[in-house]
Length: 309
Image (cartoon, rainbow, N blue to C red; front, side, top):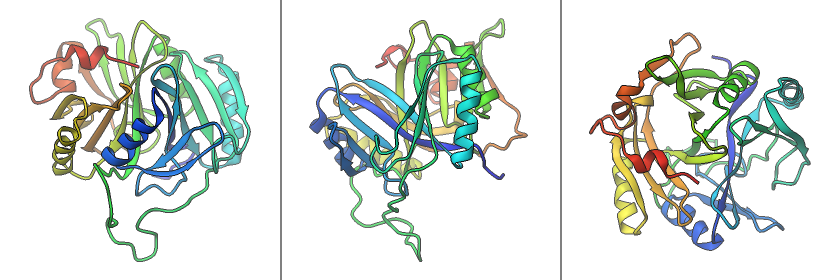
């Protein structure tokens, strides 16, 4: 499949209560690499197999949560085209351009707020500083990895009202495909898993009564064994465990959830399936939600569904 338009998640910006404990968590436990700090006090990080300068941005604030998520598009012409289409859609608010350089090593970004209350960005340029293995005769993984050492930032899950308009924007304006959904007995869609690539999802939304809520940011590991090792590291470093290790029915990924020191939920996962444009949408019924989320014990966990930042 020839990818064009929106290519992939490019960065996520998170608020943390204390910067240095958060940096230690994301570098020593999760295993990201710090790539810079800016004059605004923000810290930039990336995973070992990401070429771009950064995929995570941390800033100190009075409450945790997500500031925005940014998606990389395939070039400046696409950025201009999608910015116009988003503005003309009637499905967003607070559209604005962010000047080049406001993020380290990053070009112009177009930011807007979707109906669920979340800030979304599109950008076409970020400096590629390279992976830890390089691109010429590379080894499969580098020496000196720390912590869980995911290979990339993968997706996030967001909660909010205005759900229908947000899903419409991602599908009809930004060109995402719906891979999986959860529906009520009367057919109301309450969860949507969306991809701009051939992954099981690049972003997901849950219908919720309150706007602009963040559930988790997810990072990719290679295998179930790596997920089990992540569980050991969570215990070793006294990190707050949410749930897992287990498997999702939705997306089929092996997973474990835990919290950073500010209460933002992280996930590391492995597996899943390949999505192609002609693949039918997978539908889960609300009564099977326990099995859809936690396939092994088939039970809902209230804290998992309700603890948000």
